[in-house]
Image 1 (cartoon, rainbow, N blue to C red):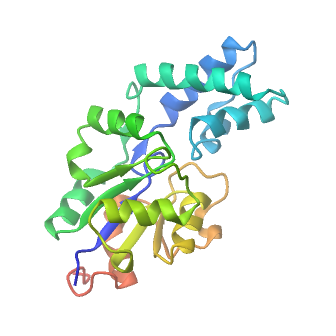
Image 2 (image 1 turned 90 degrees about the vertical axis):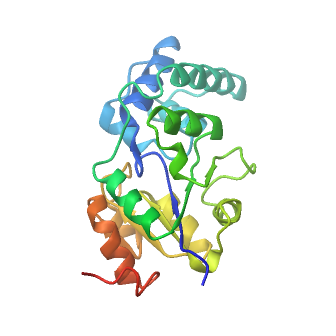
Image 3 (image 1 turned 30 degrees about the vertical axis):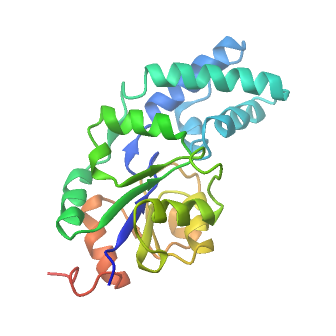
Length: 230
């Protein structure tokens, strides 16, 4: 059997990026003369990439904006965020140990995110995580965004894996819907950025810490007997 491929979302799943993303969003809003969005509200806007985050903030502030305005804000967002990409962003607790265990079991690891690919790589480079992943694919890698299942299938292929022996790990409805559409099991983390509790979104399993990932995989039977509970 081919090795198990585990595909992770990035923001809110691998790395707690909300502090730097929320700060960047508010810098861009301030340039437009708009008030800041609260940190808690900004967290719920993460997941669709910077353009959708900007659009969500403008809708929240009831500020209509044309495409030219959004494009300008998007460019400013990307430039500012790139300069502050890991000021406060850090991996979620237990991630390193979980990735070590997966690597020891010869699992293929990949990232599938709606973040731009170069920003994803820059962030993972800054946190010394890039070598962990065989493929890092963003919204611009294939010109496809989640929840289109094709981006997940292509990420698995880019990593050298097979969809029939793969699993998704994410934090939001976007990730769960993507995995379901691709007929791939999905484990949801409950510490991410969704404003709807992930248990209500229908994932196959939910974890609250990366120390629980191995048991979730065993429960799903995706790697038995190698991941049999001890």
